[in-house]
Length: 247
Length: 247
Image (cartoon, rainbow over all chains, first blue to last red; front, top):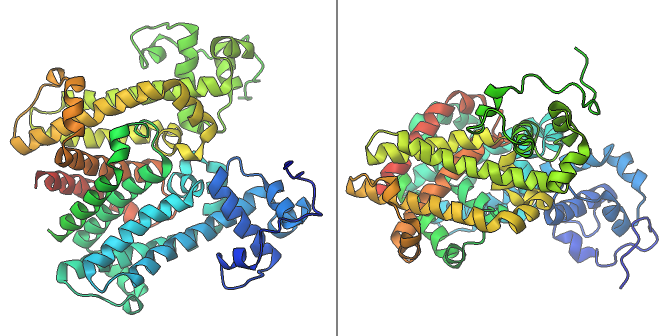
């Protein structure tokens, strides 16, 4: 089949049906603005925001390029807003995984780690912007300027809840997520060097394996024995890290 | 002072003197080919390979743009070769730090971790390509194609030596680096799940903090309390991880 012409708005992609849009939210037919963001999130994950082609999104949705400027102001603004939506979805996925985990504090901590590893792989091309912003400053600058405050709040909620999961594991209790008052805990958490230190170790140790696994770390990606043992090594790392923060 | 015109080859940058070049090697006046690589490594670290301007390097060296094509074949090839040189220098710096560390196995392990954190920050814009290649496939593809084998050998030497440092810490001995026969140890290391697992945990835990510190992880970069406690948190993480692999 010949490649679709990128300027052709008369034949939108028919695979973008109700079922497709329901993967992103509760509406089978979201607004055109949201459709553009959702489709950008998918194409950006696959090809990377750097080479992301806005014409492809317009073409598949059957809208003209000026519509993107109308809704977002331009390509970089669309990418920055989509990166924020992707980050929100990623953080949500961590806590959805914790909610679905067995009511055991270490199982919940493990669910958070496993979902960070899988969720970072799902980020695809967005992972570079979120986890290595210095590598794509033109988009990450806009992202910081417009959504920096919101992202910090999401990050703080995430790390403070992680602190609660860690303390729960140490005390063998299960705090219901809805009972965690993040704004009340914020000052206490940030003034408690031990809890903050354990949360930092857990967050960094998980970030390292998640970035390595998702970003296809260049120098090690071709080491056959490492790839063959990957699952077992990741599993061992998770077990070791949970044991570590219990000390 | 007016900005230098990028097409102006008649006034090379006079700050690029013997002293400048001695930072990169043993020759006060390396070959022009090497000068291009060294200057590219510096400019790429500062602005990032994605927006790196090859005309600036030509201008500062007083050579014309076609010289870059003559030596390297093009901008992407120059960037890929420089990324490899930068990776080599980074891995060398880890083991230079270990050599300079006190003759105590845990001090050597700590030196490796500290240098990975500082060295990753020094990578600047190169860090994205090396640690998150999926975010810049056009350069990382070339890098893999041309230098993949050499990078894997550097990586393997690094991880196998790390395994020796870890075992040394557990046995309280100091193996001289020159006595580590990496090719002889390779099969043994890759068949030993315990040593490989400890090395993986140490490598991932250090990668996480190094990437976070170097890449300016977007969502957390503005959390004041975290930035204020950064040094203590990193220090605590290093201590905790060394304690962990001794168990």
